[in-house]
Length: 127
Image (cartoon, rainbow, N blue to C red; front, side, top):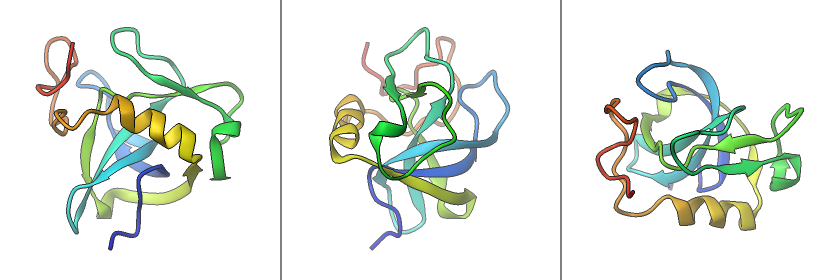
């Protein structure tokens, strides 16, 4: 069994899109891909302008949290596959209600994001 579950908020080195550099940022675990990888949605301090995202605040955490001074946004259309080794730490866990909302936006047809496309959608994203 994985040490991470859907709804866990971790810190991981990833880029939000093809125009940004990878850096340590929070992300929500949305799937355990196998014994070595996780699928995550990055969290940003700014909402996406081109795709849907879910706002979160401290009230959306059942355990732990982030140093939030205002809302942050789960970028649900930007699923990334990352190896366990890239996880820098765990910051908390979203409530069941918030986790359900995030997972509802991440459809099973979305494939892990592996690089930028012209409009920053990965190949499996629905329009």
